[in-house]
Amino acid sequence: MSSIRTLIRGGLVITASDELHADVLIEDGRVAALAAHGTAAAATWTADRTIDASGKYVIPGGVDAHTHMELPFGGTAASDTFETGTRAAAWGGTTTIVDFAVQTPGHALREGLDTWYAKADGKCAVDYAFHMILSDVNERTLKEMDHLVGEGVTSFKLFMAYPGVFYSDDGQILRAMQRASGNSGLIMMHAENGIAIDVLVEQALARGETDPRHHGEVRKVLLEAEATHRAIQLARVAGSPLYVVHVSAEEAVAELAAARDKGLPVFGETCPQYLFLSTDNLAEPDFQGAKYVCSTPLRPREHQAALWRGLRTNDLQVVSTDHCPFCFRGQKELGRGDFSKIPNGLPGVENRMDLLHQAVLDGHIGRRRWIEIACATPARMFGLYPQKGTIAPGSDADIVLYDPHAEQVISAETHHMNVDYSAYEGKRITGRVDTVLSRGELVIDRREFTGRAGHGAFIHRSTCQYL
Image 1 (cartoon, rainbow, N blue to C red):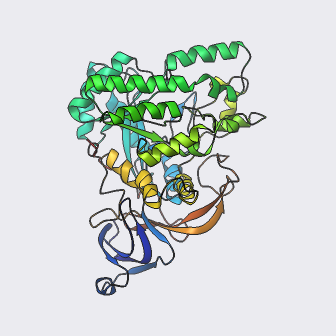
Image 2: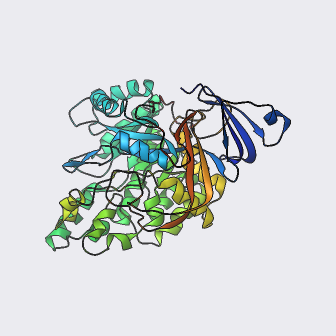
Image 3: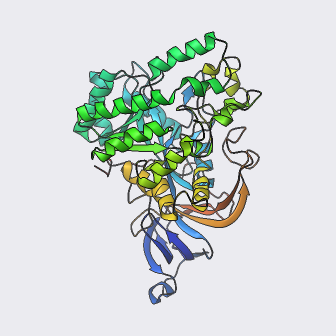
């Protein structure tokens, strides 16, 4: 915990609710006070360190509620460790990640959680928390869910996809939802009809359709929409809230909107890849499309408008990355000649805040909405607010000085994620992180990394704050 008194002067403070030219005083790793710039109150403040934020935005550190560091998948593992991944997050203005601990089928949730604690402990440059992936719903694991909620792991992810790996059937899903409705946990759902998709995969491969673009073609929009609908109905039966991850298709957004119009506690997340990329990328020649294989898959470009609209109307509330990087060489290449063997996932933890700022400039969302979907709402959704996600007295001093005029070109040459390509290679954007504080400690100081592995702490989360 930093005991240095820090004063950030002269920036435009932007939160989900306000924009104000204000000075921010930091003590003991927390925000001590804010005062309008130039007022008598602010003029009296003294500090050990003063940071000039003139011409910059002063924003809360990003909260990325969906990352997969070191995730084992398809005989390999995500290429970012907790150390490299959280460092890259900091470079991108994200100061808290919520990653996923994985239960191995046949084993206790506790065992999976302890494995992930061990992976992250002493390694992280910024703060972190965990969701729990349930791969095996039974009497024992249902009881364990209650204990985990007490330990600050208050959300549980289930999969309607990946039979034989993470898949849960409707009965298991219903039981987990019933348990969550009793212990105030939040069920997160990967909503795709994996049983039907597997049939389509088998048929496509039998026809010799092996290229990456076929990954998008077999994982049909309708099978995402159907699973989303089914998850919502199961949650209604169980009396449980539902958070649908990585929503990619217009028809799935429509299912969420219809549920929310009924007043149901149903929430949706999308990711930058669905907002900025499309099946055009999956169709890139010479197996380059493999770089863009993730699930849910990239969709035809016309779905992007529905996702942006959903973010404006609050039918979608959160933008997370689903950061799950695999190197093109040696990892994505495992699927040459069989798209179903391409590890699913792409890198993005470093790009999210910048891409969403570009979306502000492009007129898709407003500045406060940028902070809302990237910082405040994920913090509230997963029981971290107001410790995280805002700049207010008592909040952790997780603060980003953001230069809204700096221009950059996104490239694997310059990014800090441990992966050999960028999903947004060559994209020109305006806006860049300048300085990052995590609990009052400088992690990025004027575009220089000054953080360290082990600064990041495990954060004990409360339950969803929208219920």
